[in-house]
Image (cartoon, rainbow, N blue to C red; front, side, top):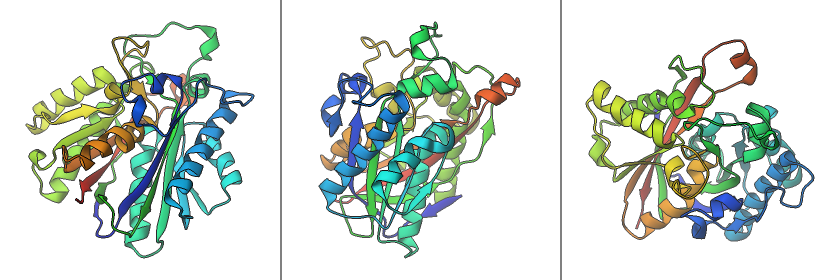
Length: 326
């Protein structure tokens, strides 16, 4: 299902990261970079809570706006990073979960509230933390477990965006809600392969719903397939839909320097796509390099319990069309 929005704009954004992200090629585009993974807190989970509150507080300071409602989620069980952060923020809150596709789902829901006249200002946000995610989904990093080359590296950070009906230079033109797709993959170390077909389905659905050719967009972005999932997506789009993704990149490939940083197949995590988009991509759009960008965030709906039951891992992708209004 694709929604077209008439009056939904991204007025301001805020990005907060950890040390790996700040040391990567896009480090200069982030608002705040912490030098270690604790951020002055006692444990990884509370550190992630601090990421969320930091991003929202920066966004409020930059925009000077109090939102009617906040929409967000994270990777942790019961989205606790978001829930505990909202206890401090004290705003009306809608908690959501779409794994690493949470950012685009939040943007679609926020734009729907604004375009429907139910809210004037909406803050959407998400977060992930490398060590809190690894502890929950695989093994604590301190165990030193070996990883496969197809493994992606959960990014650490939080990203927030202010949506409103006030015209700005970035318009959220439309959004496509994806569907859950199971590619019969059981490997928890190959999330790119798990999510690639879901991304393809959503991109194709968006183009079909809107009647657009792939060339309508100056750039197609996915997040967070990594180098192997990126290749699968390109091959699948060509073989299944006869679509060549020439104007394409993956935010999981862009966030880190894959040659010098120990991040395996690239970045992952709900914050991966918005960190790259809200910082670097928006800057490029404002400079005139891109006028129309389709961002299809991707999420592996992985549960350790279900994996231990020997079930395959389903995935989903939600996409938003972003247009520069200069």
